[in-house]
Image (cartoon, rainbow, N blue to C red; front, top):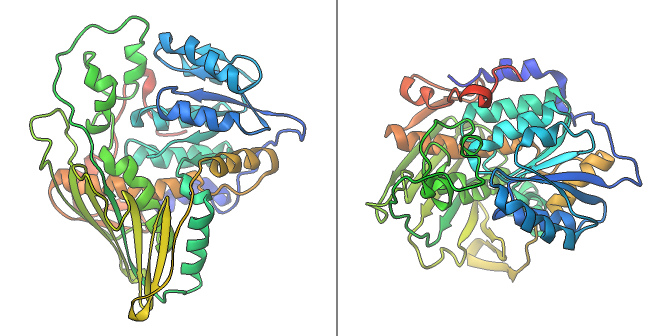
Length: 425
């Protein structure tokens, strides 16, 4: 059973209704940041944060020791001085000079790194999906509130001008009452062919990499690209790219927790590879009190785009519709009158800058961890419906799945040893 939502919020007190009261950096201080996970997304975020004038990347952390020194030299070219290097996040958190951590690990480490960070008094920027499962996300919200830390979810669209303008237009009724939003992820992903288990590479702490996940032998597909498609570590592409689009759709609809979720999915193209998650999904989420529905569609074998957008969201109102993506957006009113159809730009910088402004000046986060939890919850519920093979009914007040013991068991896992997600943060 998901933690009873009403009791969960009551246990956090009034802090859930206001910005966390946090210590602020002095006006002339630079915020000292540690990058946790330096491949791929971590490297991109490091470069973005390094461009901000009030940030200093003081530490980099990765379980793969051979990656550290070359990346430290790269960071030193972007900022003042080389960062310290660590393979164990706990040593970074023990350092009182670190103000914040940026979590760009695989999904299964997002929650524990965030909770540990809050407990150590650090602010946290955590990539989406915020968690590997529902329980973890709830504990992340609890930790942020208890320790009064700023925790920003890495759904960058929340800070981009044309998305924020679009939400204002929707809120002001420009296309009437919006009853439905459709989010989609249509792109061509590569297959992950099976490979045999092998010895752990020199310099890699495989035990630490596995963290809260079950212990298994090293396999290149678990460690590299393939982890996203394995339930022990990832959440499929619905929890990867899909969370961005689900977040925008939910934001525009102005909804929080659905009362029903139903997902039809399959492996239509990737049969025979190691992928456990579906390559095709069609999910619906119902919000009857708001007279709204959210639809999510995913195809990972499409060498073409839907509505001209690889990832996008359409809002359907009683007086028109809006289609929006990272590179363009348009609005169409009655009688198919195109109000505008324009190209635009996208940058991660405003979202990272918003996180720093929250730390330094107490600005409101554009995507606080509780917002990230609600959007990630949609991905988890969609995947749960797929895995059990039936629709789910949800009590939105208590945030629990109704009368489905099998689905309820998948809402959390117990972790292992020192990597267990705590019941009390």
